[in-house]
Length: 216
Image (cartoon, rainbow, N blue to C red; front, side):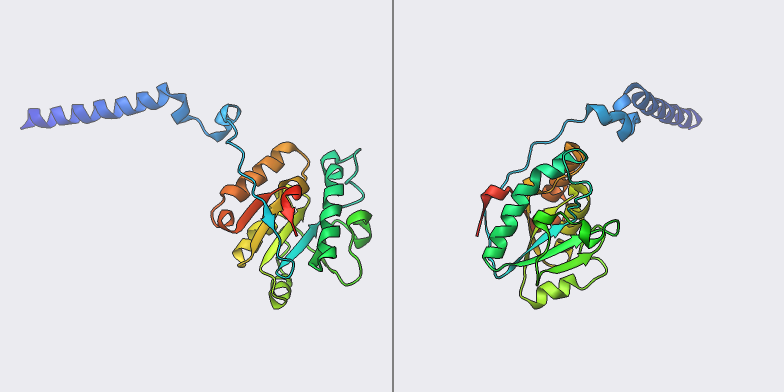
């Protein structure tokens, strides 16, 4: 029996040594995500879908376009999308859709880009991140029969991503045109689009599209 016990102990020790050697000998198992960073390949782009807007049940939310920085000299990606946002806004107004505008605590209402600024009768909120947070926007929209939000704004990885997730958590569907959600960098837009397409919960309630694929 003593010999048998020693054999088992030696076997256990050998197994532990083999496991340790495999970890040391295989850097992929030992390293963390930062060490893998440069080797990670972006996944395939998500599918964009055409959308038919129900003007009576959809609200357009225009988020945080700031004339102090949404210019080619400072944020070229932001400036480039303004004509598309302006076109969507004009089409939404033409169909009598509800329109909501937001600006951040770092802005004043006067800082909003003039070409996509609110007109009389449109709701304006000053709020950071998720535009449903700490205000009555959810109740305001639901009281008026709104079930879907059309989200455009900057930044992709801030207001648009957080508000799309916030809409999903509050029982709304979200439509997100990927060419009207600028960020400071292409990677920030790519990450946000991927998260909307793949994040638990939000992926079931969101439709990624492009502004020229939207019909009213």
